[in-house]
Length: 483
Image 1 (cartoon, helix red, strand yellow):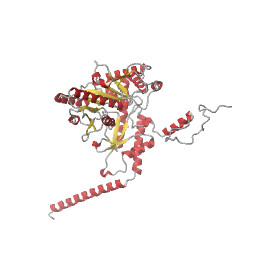
Image 2: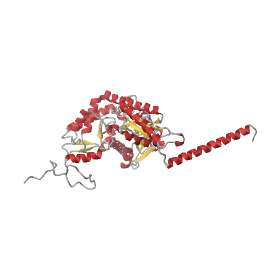
Image 3: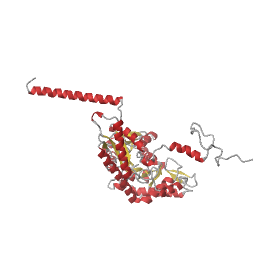
Image 4: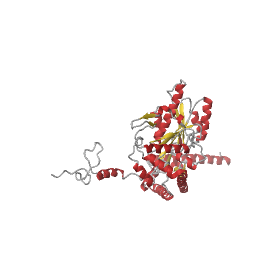
């Protein structure tokens, strides 16, 4: 009797799958590899093209030599240092290089770790701030039940997660009018004896602006001396940590400042590695509380771990070391200058159109944040969200969003100039933006609410003009002695 067809030869399943994936239950039967791949690929076909996704700070291109190395490390469990000792060594090499780049204390062993993106890095940095504050307070016999952390309202959402998960009171500092970052004076004014630390941002998500970290450090030093506190600064350099050292060498923001105790950055952003890789570094070993360092011997030897997770792939740290060795300081500088050049080409093109206002800084992250010029009477039937939607027709993903609540819910668009955005693409993008504006001008339809608003504005303007004309007429008659 002939053997029944096996799953391996695919003869027991139809050539084409005629039913969609039923996600309401676990699949009862097997299918051929190609058919499974087709079903999954079918779900992904309508995704955006990563290189045209200008919403993302995350790296979308790496060289073939690096991707091959990362592919080889895909099945390697990073945490298993007994069997894969090179991964631990690679991580330590990266930590040591970052300690040098960000000027950590030379007399201390480099202290830091890789993380799953900057979110885990922020959580670890914030947890260390809280634990150091608790230990100091307990040693002094003081209450530890009301920790708070001070930060601007434009910080990334991960800081809100930190305060929620770790039960720390968030003290949000509003932006002053005309500014897109919190003022240093306002940050200091929000601090008290229960403040575990102050957050400074090196490159906000909204506009790419850098905090004046040196100015904040001076104020923190002064208040520490006056009040007897030990306030520290955590620099959220998720994006700017791999930008500022290479193109703004005169900017002092890192461990050269006395009160900066920890820094996080994203290797998967301007560190030029595929997602998700982050880094958190401490000034020296004393800034990382010993109570956050764990030991285990599950995998054959004593291991030290300070991360929130355990098992993960080794591919990202392999990719990071490749980029550090491949690029060096010179290469990272060249890449950053290229990204800033793309940014300046975009700014020049947008200004030439005459329809836009640029709100991002020319000395910050390589991005452009901009909004439509306000028209008298609000006479426009579309906004930035419509422009973003129209650009999707060309394949571009350009996000529209509102700025921090203190900035009047201003709608903006943002374009991140990653290293795979070149001058030819910038030129094409500018043409598509202009075409989108023209199409919206020709086809936009006012909603009832917009029409009512325009009518109300017009009526108010007419009434004001009528009153002005009446006043001028009376003034003229009075001058001629007629009234």
